[in-house]
Length: 277
Image (cartoon, rainbow, N blue to C red; front, side, top):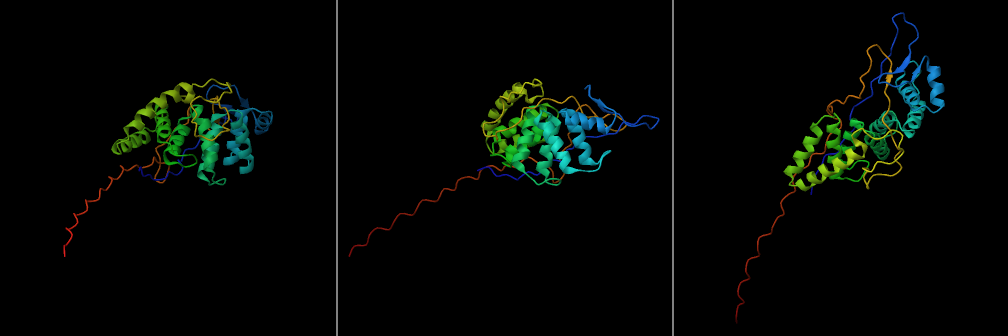
């Protein structure tokens, strides 16, 4: 039987910055990765969010979560992020997955974290793909599935996540003489990539990814890749979320030990011959 060590949450956050003009005029809230969204004030962003703009809702949710230009309001932040995620914003889905997995700002809810990570992973967010693979591998928030877990780690590595997680799980499966799992996971990773897990899902398709696992919870919202993130400080934030290696105590891939050999009891000694009277 494979043995494992349970994972805990990965410390990955979405970067925020504040863009200020040289003359200290009011900051302009804009997308940094080519989107057309821009707002000259928090009030304008609020109106856009209320009108159903997912990017505005995501950015405003981050601001309320971190207290940037607005007071910290966790309930309002979560409501905004949920609305954006349900409308197909991948970064909002990832953030909700992180919040539910950590249990520091809102109560921990691993099944809900899994649902949100899966939505973001299907949209191509490498960090969500890594976290999803680790959750499958350890059986937290979802039924344990080593094939699905390694497959998502393979896809995550392809999309820029730290390859150490994939390597660690491969090594332990090899030592446990479970190479058939590795072969199946590699085939599954190809299916996931073709289904959009490599970040090439069609925007606004509204279709559930063909690569979603049959053992995964249902009700995952359709997600599209977001245009970008808010620019809220002087150097612009990078176009992609950057993943950091898991910190001590952070998300880890389960350690798998080889199955113990079956003990074969020694044969019973021959019974002594019956004594005759």
